[in-house]
Image (cartoon, rainbow, N blue to C red; front, side, top):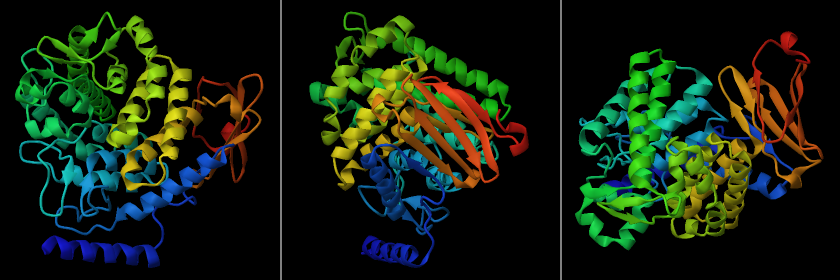
Length: 448
């Protein structure tokens, strides 16, 4: 009865907010237009969907901040969904993006676990995925370090819990917990292939878990360095390097040229997308990465895995990031565009919320190539040939900037950045390359 009353009151409060209050997410804050009308409609549709899911700060455990209602239960908040949503929302409102990830840090357990799910009365014993720490880092890049410094101690406690309780003697990580293992979408195929793995949790070395822990350590190092905590930065950098060495030594399959899960001495060919995650951790050599990239056609052909497992969508965001790290920008953009297309084909069913989020984030970040920091834009266009002659327009009213990209027939991209006072930049960038555009006074950057 208590949850029923809570749900009714929460729904009523949020309906009232949407009817009489101002929107928290709308195109007056940020906007993307491409030569593809279907993409534009999907982007605007996701804005509206997120607006409908955002909740007032009401509840026993999530009362301090605005938060995002989860797909499974509108009264709960999911770390995976909230983190990916925050990476989209930060373009519109970095403060709101920080709000919706804050409940997970606010509800850290005494052991140090940042929970995967926050409920009105309880918190999950399953830890949040690494994308939460990565999201905090990405938000801080737009807003500076003032917001991230308050969270760093909590992140350190979480990292210490991982090291103390989930690191095995061989230097790798296991779930070590039946519920966490069963809840991990990245081990679903392993569980199906080898049901006995649930009874041998401390012998399981999942490629996804170890890769994402390494990525989390790298994010911790970058956050520490931004806070001028050089000793801590070096510590996490070294932890990440050691783990990456172990991933390469223990999970690389030389004959197949790919990374797989391992249980004891046995290799298990897990979901193909998870084998790409070591790229984002900088684990493989360049020669190994070249062999891994050969799997991309098969990954694209099997995007229907998102129908059975929509919760695998964040893995595609991480995998595309890894491809760009190794210089495979064209391949990364192709995968990003295919994920975006496939996510749109799934329709508006609630269960495909994560694929829709992943598709739009990949569009902005890895196809249009828009990246905003607190002191500059980085434009890294990877525009498809079909957009030649068309215009990509990015509207950023918060900075009073409009960015226009146009792909020419010679594979050059004209980039113009203007404000109310006139044109700030007019530059030509080769497609699949990048350029920094620092924020300066209008007078000093005219025709730079």
